[in-house]
Image (cartoon, rainbow, N blue to C red; front, side, top):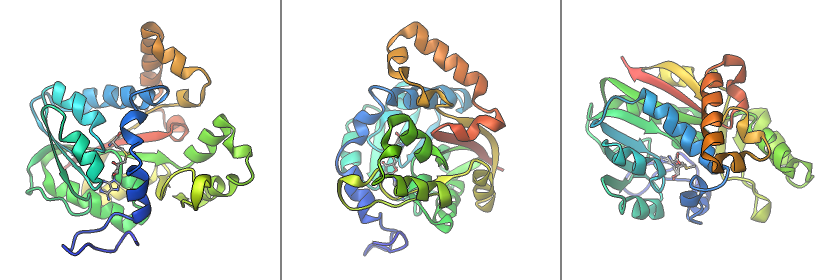
Length: 276
Ligand SMILES: C[S@@+](CC[C@H](N)C(=O)[O-])C[C@H]1O[C@@H](n2cnc3c(N)ncnc32)[C@H](O)[C@@H]1O
């Protein structure tokens, strides 16, 4: 199904291959173990510095199974999670302090100016068309109160090349064309069967994100590489197992997180902005 098709209720429909990918239930464990914890702890580290004090109303759009909603609710925020995958909603709805409902970033079922914070930690990299991404950001703008904070995650343009060079998959001639295509135009296109590295996705250049914010009336105020270069280093998972080493990793990444020349090295990028 094309990304711009609509459901019977007139809502934008999630592409079938994205629904199938997340229906495999791999998402909940992804950030809770191994090297995935770097993304979780770094996102948490940046968000804890940016968010207003709790309690504040946080709308977690594309919140998945609630890995971030869980700690945000434990921190005292009133968290509403929206996601188009029923399995994610079922998991998130069981978390204490989290309200979860089905929905799409491009048509939010939330009143105007009803949120202090909107998180978009997923939708922008699953919307290959710029018009859809701007529509999602425009919805975030609508539901934010004046002065409210938005934080959006994107995947960097060369994440596929870097990740697969590090894992060695780049050297598989059957996989390399997908990786090279994503670096050329930002589009990750799934192929049939086991040779698919990811589902439909769009990989941004860091400098493109503020323009998409501006097109939705939002002012970008800062960008933060989530994993920096650390995600590409062998042995990072073992470093995270050790509490002392983990703190050193987090400190080092705090120092480099907004250095312009390093933004694109990170796998994920957070862009923070405000409704003026
Ligand atoms: C990689 S997961 C990230 C989940 C979570 N926010 C996190 O940071 O761990 C991407 C999420 O985006 C959701 N998503 C994809 N397209 C979306 C859309 N059009 N609107 C809202 N969410 C969407 C998926 O269902 C999935 O839960």
